[in-house]
Length: 447
Image (cartoon, rainbow, N blue to C red; front, side, top):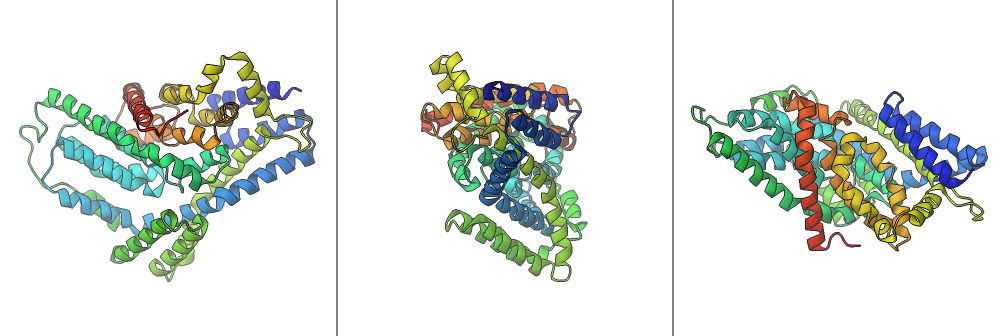
């Protein structure tokens, strides 16, 4: 069968199964590509070779880093270090609050929380602290979700996050390389974040008539009891070792960013030191708890490897082209050249409305196609994928197709999820445009 036809069939089947949502995504990514590879005429040995080569490449470039990175940050979260930092920030502000300060704090806490590179953990850190403040000022609680998610999206370039690892797999580069290319995009979020504060402040003042406490509200000290109590209830919290854990964390960042020590070695060392110092009597228990977080991620990584291996499968003798190359060639023959060259930019602009109706897994499954098409115009894979790393995060919080949306809405006490996603989709669409415009003006985006 023609690689072009098979590529279309595989994409349609994968997308249909994901939208249908009756079959586990991992199962789809394992079975569908494997069957398609056999239908293309490859033997079991050839198919296995393609897949194992892809898995080995991914584990070497990102898998081990992600494994020990997740273990380390799970331990760090268990020690309560992030809770202490955020409680200190809240106490520092004290009574010097108004609506703008509350929104700024939401952005800062969201960004700090995402150092764990885990979306759900970030929500659990940020919203229990900030939602009581939003209630005190009668500030729309939907703003909290939007503001936090925008700050989180700006931080999505962290190389130990699962999102950037998956994108790096698609781009055929290391997570560290893609992180370096994506960091300028994170900086492009700054004007958008500030404009969100301004817009929401204007909306609030029109509604309430003030940016301070509403009439009748008590200017009481910021409530942090619930967070502190939560910290005390954590059996693995080690507040007395805060400064030690913070020092190790700073050393990790310096080793990764400045000295460029291989990331998996940094995280192995940090995880060992953290566990032995914080949990000398039960370090095995904390390793088991931290390591369990990687299992589902590992299964997903291998499933994506199946998809990528088959999509890019081609014999070394060049007797047959890969599906992604064949599909790119077919599309360049159908669409005008000027449109093909800007395909990834068009999809970048439309990322929020598209993901409102289509799961982000389907969207990211198109990355190999974007890369292959852009390659015909002399563009590298990193240049094509880097814009999506952070901007994709804007869309994932305002779609009913993502479970994280429901987690965030629950914590923000937003009852009507569909109404929120419709309203938030408009906000995030314009936020995305502002980020892209900033990237164009500053030269971060060029083509």
